[in-house]
Length: 170
Length: 81
Image (cartoon, rainbow over all chains, first blue to last red; front, side, top):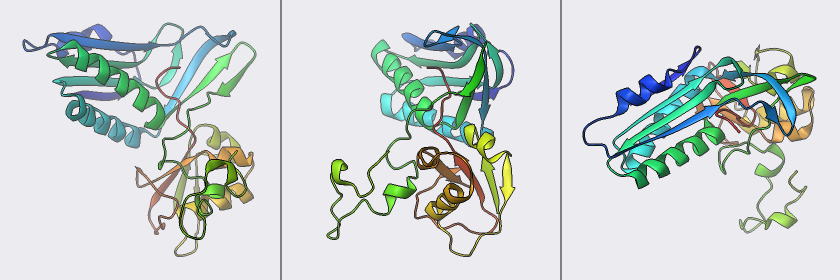
C-alpha cells in the first residue's frame, strides 16, 4: 500500500512498476492530468491545496476499504498539491489484482470517492481570472446543512418528502 | 478553539484560521450558523459545507469542546474533473 500526498512530480511509471507482483493478472492505472480548459475557458495552471493530515488519513481509509470491498491485492494512491500546469498528473490511482474486473471497479470507486470525500481543493487560474472549482456535494450524512438539518422532520419523526421541506433546499 | 478555513472559505473569511471563544455546549450546526450570520458569502456557500472535528467528519448535532481542532470544508474538488 502506497498512500502519499506530495508536492513534486508524481513518478507514475515507477509507482506502477513497484506495485506489480507475481500473483497479479491485472494492474489498472488511473492517471488524472490537468486539462487545458474548463468549458472552453483556457487554463493556465491549477493550484491544489489540502487539509493535509486529514486528507492523508481519508486516503488511507479509502485504500483499506477498497482492498476489502473489491478483494484486490494492493493499491497505490498519490495526490499532488501546489501549482500544476497542463498535462501534469494531479492524482494517480493504481490497483493490482489477480483479475481485471476487480481492478477496474476498485480503481473507478477510488477516484470517484476521493473526489467527493477527501479534503483537497483546487483553484483554477485562467487567462482572464481565477476561481475555486465547484466541488461535488458531500455524500449524505457528511455535510452540514444548517437550514435543513434541524427541521427536516415532521412531528411524528417521518422525514418530509423533498418538495415540502420547510424553507426548501437551495 | 481554533477554526480552520479551506478553499473558498479562506478567501471569504480573509484568513486561514480564527481563534474563537465559544460558549460551552455549542454544536457544529450552531458554529456554522454563527459563521453564516457574521461572515461574508452567500447562504448557499455555508449550507454546502462539511465540518471536521479533530480531522474526522462531524455531524451537525456534535458538541464542540475546548481544544478541538475544527475545520470548515467547502465541497471538495481534488482529483480531476
